[in-house]
Image 1 (cartoon, rainbow, N blue to C red):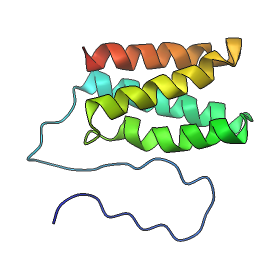
Image 2: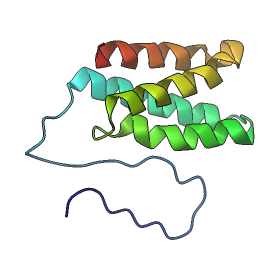
Image 3: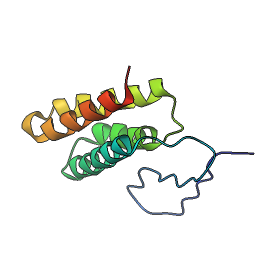
Image 4: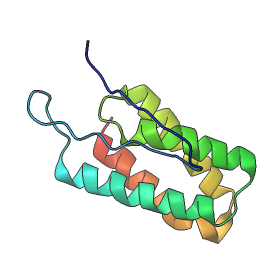
Length: 110
């Protein structure tokens, strides 16, 4: 049996998962990991600034997919596009998030 085991007992706004694996699988380039970390920080900040409940749910669902190296590329891209759409609808407030999404997409390649 392989994969992550996640247990959550209570709490609120439980979002994201940090995968700490060593050996075996090829890890992502440091620039990609850094860009994803920055995007995650910005999305959490954006979420805390009071987006709609529906937008908060999309962010909550997207963050683990974006952060996981195990996510299929098409799922990761879909999650990135979803959060970019939310950020873009917020105008100037979401500009830095859209820029961060563009950076991650560029580092993921075609």
